[in-house]
Image (cartoon, rainbow, N blue to C red):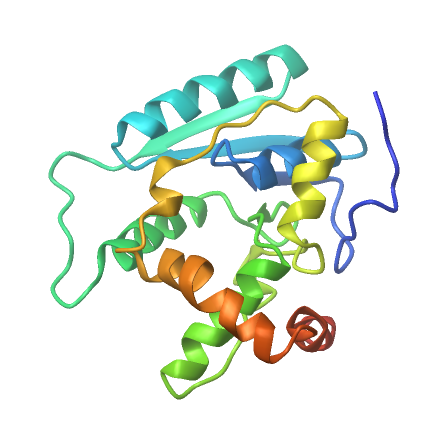
Length: 208
């Protein structure tokens, strides 16, 4: 199994015990594998009610069982409905964080696996709405220490270390704003400024 501490960068100092919010995708599965080598990790999986989430839950639960990692499962209730004025994306995000915050404490934070590409896409979206910003390092005791890494770095870690993961088919659905920015706007933004990731990375470094 290949291992290099320099492949993945962490912002801030992490306590010995952490929770990791894991969706079953390449980035979060790579983070679980990476952190479990030197930290006491418990995984949190949140089920949004889709067929994909059922498949992802099985993958995450099996991976954790094989690694002797505690896996906490949660999910939406049948009577959960989208709040007036909220998009489906916003509603799902609100539900997830409400669940994560049940466990997050300063001494045992919940780690989400946002990466540099997420920060770039968020900056583009927020700029188009008149308030340019990046994904912040923390939200109470939910923290995002992997923002210095590109998604491809986390995918490479998963591939080199034979970490299983599952692709979410909705990631190509451009009806979701995030996906529209990722697939349709990002190529144009990078044509205008090929160094956009470096620009946003400077903002990420300053935000801890």
